[in-house]
Structures are given as structure tokens and as C-alpha cells.
Amino acid sequence: MFSHLKEDIACVFERDPAARTTFEVITAYPGLHAIIFHRMSHALWKHGFFWLARLLSHFARWVTGIEIHPGATIGRRFFIDHGMGVVIGETAEIGDDCTLYHGVTLGGTTWNKGKRHPTLKNGVVIGAGAKVLGPITLNDDVRIGSNSVVVKDVPEGATVVGVPGQLVIPREKQEKREEMAEKIGFDAYGAAQDMPDPVANAIGSMLDHIHNLETEINEMRENIYNEGSADAWQVGKTRKTKEEE
Image (cartoon, rainbow, N blue to C red; front, side, top):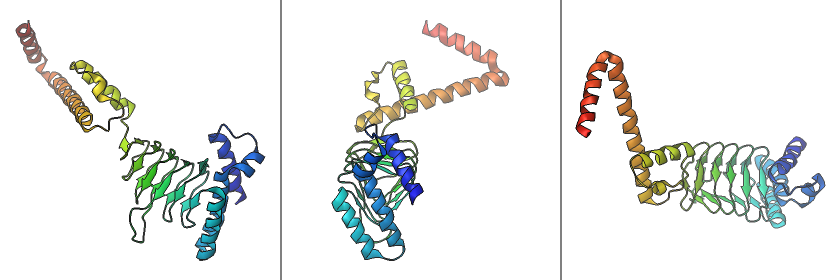
């Protein structure tokens, strides 16, 4: 219990530059208070004291403005910044080193019993006002933009923005698209880094397809050259150059 508390206090200093002293964090950070209350209510829940656990979580909600069901499973070094309006459902599972900002909801999409809330792996960060709904999984180091609505699994290291949530294109893939667009004489603005527009998505897919075709053709050329047809290849290449001239 105390080892968890020390880690929880330390992670506040790591993730909130406004934190000044340990005394201030212990006495004036509702996110920390909510975590402390949850660890107690979760222990009661696991031992079958369901009503008492719900009563304690209800008191914590009244004091902090943060609602965490006592059945939710939360890992180490969990940080809720500001915290007002955060809601975490009963079957939610949160890994280590995760961060939530105010207004985040980890909610369900069904009235049926069983697993109905999200699972957050390690290092997940969810921006203010975002809604993560249903029994989906946010894998390690996922980032969710503010006010996004996420209803599908998110792969490791990805960033999601928008309503409904859309994956932001990795920078490496974006650079390849821009390079290909420039090569074929297409205005690269259509391949912007955040492309929720379906037409822009289609253009981006076409650029990816062209890049893959070019890669395959280059590999075929190299194989032909390496298999002893270098002379024939060179003759064909020279003939094509003369025709172009």
C-alpha cells in the first residue's frame, strides 16, 4: 500500500510540471485522492464487501469529482490530472504508467453482464474529454487525442484523434507518401498527416499502392540483372531511352 502511494506521488512530479511539494500533492491533488480511495474500495470489492466498496467509491466521487467503480482493475503509477468528470467502469482494466485527463470516460456500450469496458495496456495517455467505449483494447503507449471517441482496438504506439477516432498516419509512412506524390507530380497536401476525409484516405491508399508497385518492379529489375540477363536488360533500357528521345 505505502509502496504504491510513494510511486503515485512520484509520478505526479514526473507528469505535472505544476507540482511543487509533496505536501501539496498529498493534500491538494484530487487525482491522487481518487486513486487512494479506489485502492481501498477495490480491496473491499475483492473480499466480497460490495455495498461497502460502492459506498466508499461514492464518497470518493463526492469528494474528488472522479468516479471509479470499485471493480475496476488499475495498475501502478496511474495518474489522473485535474480529474473532474473522469468515469471508469466496473470491468475496465488499466495497466502501469497510464495517464488520464479530466472528462475521460472508460465506458460500456451494452447492458449485458461480463466484460464491457476498455482495457488499457501500459503507458497509455488519454486526453481531456475523450470517450473510450466498449470491451476494446488500447495497446502499449497508445495516445488518444482530446475529445476523441474510440470504439475499436488501437495498435501499439498509435495515436488516435477525431470522432469517430481515426489513426494518425505514422511519420515514416507519411514521408513515403509525400515522396511518391512529389515524384508523380501530385500536390502532396492531399496526403496530410491527419486524414479523416474518405477522399484523402483513398488518395493516400493509392500513393501507398504506387509505392509498393515501384518497390516490386525495382526488385524484379535487380533479380533479372543478377540472374545473368544484364546485357539484355541494358539493350532494352537503351532502346527505351532512344524511343523517348
